[in-house]
Image (tube, rainbow, N blue to C red; front, side, top):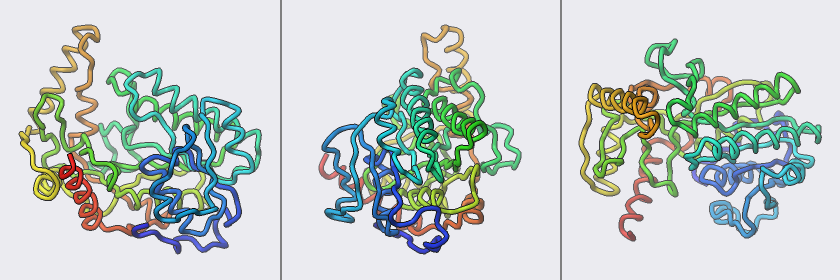
Length: 360
């Protein structure tokens, strides 16, 4: 595993020991596989991986740790209370990465992010041995309006209000998921830590984040301009997630996960075109993108939803308004440091995107 760290926390100070069962939901996903590999690198020997489909192969883990007996694959669905009870049996730390990510329906997003999380935490209550529940959320929950720290978007920034009016099913479900975890902490003592990664990238995830631009209209519209993009290289993100489950004394904390030396949108797009795949794009200035979102939002209201409000001022503020980002809390309180530099991470990511273009 590139840049894996084994020394962030001394073994005797960890919440879980090498033999303690650890559960990773969403273990077959882009980030989940790196979380599992990170745990194995740290010497954990009972890593339980929940996947929906029998035969699911953890490619990254298998390559890093071929035939590792430390990985226990279990198959089930978090919508099943029985599967949740089976998954959390004797587990000391849970890394909850499973969530609905591609659903456009609010009902599906709620079902696969909120109901599943509720089933999981209820099962933990019955088991009574959990030491830490790490809930992996997203930057998508932030509104980026009226930020108390000026241009810096950090953990103190406000959460989106009524995201359902913005047509953002993913943000809506993530906000409700976070609220549920915090509610169970207050009412039932659930020991949790909340992680909110920015735009996670790396080999295996080749799509350009929407914070740079969109190709909805048949040509790529570059909307990010001079904005910094809150990138987190996948292995750096996994390292922060794993640390959040092991470090004592941080219950109830929220951590944003972004790397150092974040590139600006135009810098990233220039690199991508040069080193991965050239394509045409049109730069849309900030005032024009705001006007587009304003008019789209107004017409969506006027048409009573016949035109979905996929472009709106809330999205503009969240994705294209522009902010600076801080990982100071992640470093100071969690002891995280960036292991894969932004330069090296971009090199690996762009090489993977170039390979896709060669074989397309």
